[in-house]
Image (cartoon, rainbow, N blue to C red):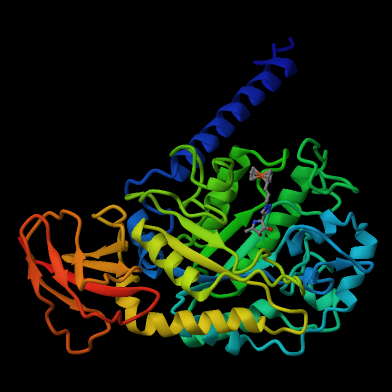
Length: 472
Ligand code: H79
């Protein structure tokens, strides 16, 4: 007698499908639960390093000031293609000048930055008062500044330079106690499986690439594994180019979880997912992946207490080097922008675009040195501070640390009286941060405090008056 099979093949296939669906739903739920970017304390999954969200963000919130470095093959054409100046930001020249991939590849043969000295770059950042460096491991052109085993489109295989730039920077950062961080483009104009935007418009965001998932699994993720495991502990992974059609929020959540599975304490910006609200940069809601918002080339108009964000900004009008862009912001503007950003509770990531021979443009270097001179005196009013409790006073900005208010006075009073907007709490004393002796300045008033200050501003750009409140 023949026994009835318990299940027909069709039935068992159905059960398999149901089982697989349940498992994938559970995985999706797990990923969702582990990557919501809510402000509440959240534990990382690692056994060796269990940090809450606040603990993980701690160094970053304290740092307030970092150096962005955009460096790659675009430094070779430096804004000029076939004798013509190309409009727009330098690192976009491949797209803006509609350069075919095979043509663009020729720049690799000319990339030989023998003047590159990682130690000098890191010291320049450190002396400017910057606590971290974010360098382009890979920009939209796909070219890799490190020794990647996954591609020949990198510094080792495609250029005569053949030195792992990120390795050298990692060593210098470790030596000088500066946090190393990587910018990494999700969009890739060079990889055949990622170019949704086919030539002549690499940034055609309306098109899809049928092989995009293959690019994510067999290229993007393996490359990130190299970056996150071979260069010591990283501070931040700073994603960009997430606006392409093929990138989705679930992919962003998956990538966020993947990177943190490799390094649980790493911080990841909100461009890993799709939550960013345009160039304003803040996330549209807590349900999106990412640890901090990324305003680009702008500072939020108001303070944003309780929200982590970082303004990234160029010193001239380009991120990647353009030989003829001389539209430099003044050191005065840059210092005041740093104070403005800190007074609103954010970080300032200020960019340099090194030249093809490996040197930072002299105008950038000069500004960083001048910012460093200001920071040498005033760093206490920047590091570890939180947003203003005075709004935006007429004369400048305010940062806060514990019971201290740092009054950043841009416009020094001509009558010797600094009027402080209404504050909560009683004043213990006031002094100039530039005064090593901390001599007390005369203070009057209860609710409307005024401080008598010297006729001469200690600093023409931003003089900091420290207002110490009584502990209550
Ligand atoms: O790496 C630097 C630039 O190359 C890169 N980001 C900085 C840090 C950058 N890429 N594009 N842009 C800057 C400008 C592009 C803006 C747009 Fe969009 C992309 C307009 C439409 C798609 C992103 C999404 C901003 C608005 C919507």
